[in-house]
Image (cartoon, rainbow, N blue to C red; front, side):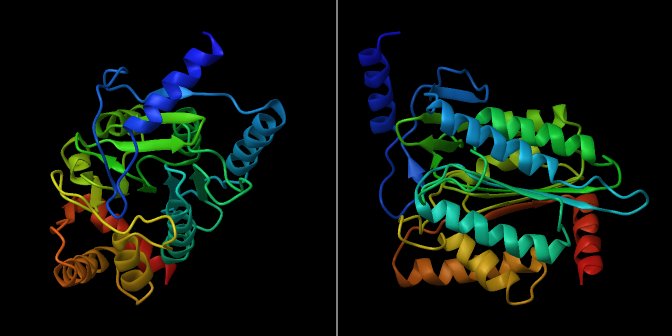
Length: 295
């Protein structure tokens, strides 16, 4: 493919997926991957940077500890999918809060699209996300352990979470793709938290008795607070920074966060984002056990 042609495709993709300020929303575009999880455009970084990023992933995965027999361990994956700095800041802070709250020390990893200078975390590419899920699955006891996933990014009106690294990567993570990957990895007991516009679309393909799903918005609503200069989105601030740091449990904290977000939206005359949840009984019991044992 000619360099000018590649550049033209990348430019068009970037323009198509530009997000408005303040809302974690993008305009939907036709899906050339037909629902599969992959990159629409991915440009390889220079060899030294590519080698460094590969080493970041392998080192981070190698540092994850195996599960302990006859104990419920928690494995935590946090992914910032878009390279506006607010998402990486939110991911890093949320990972620290969740790791302590759930006792996941040594069993936690951050993937990030960057956005704050030199990369400190493995890239949140489709291959790296899939590889991370696959590796974590080899460490877990699928019947005994709990998997927690937090994703923060922009979202599209058809329910996808968007991936972007400027001038390098454009992709979409669709709800059905995430559900399929978790099933293929045999990750059974799950808590999935999605901070993005229209993220309620992740609930139908994920919900079951072994899964808790918490989303920043309904399937037909935008969420707010994603300006690049912010430290948190509205959802991240209300849920992680205020509710969980304030001593709430994860399920109680979600209700507190909903009330706080509603107050902010009413004050600013914003259309309510209407955060959603689906609470599987088995996963909720495992989550509550993890919280008790961590404290």
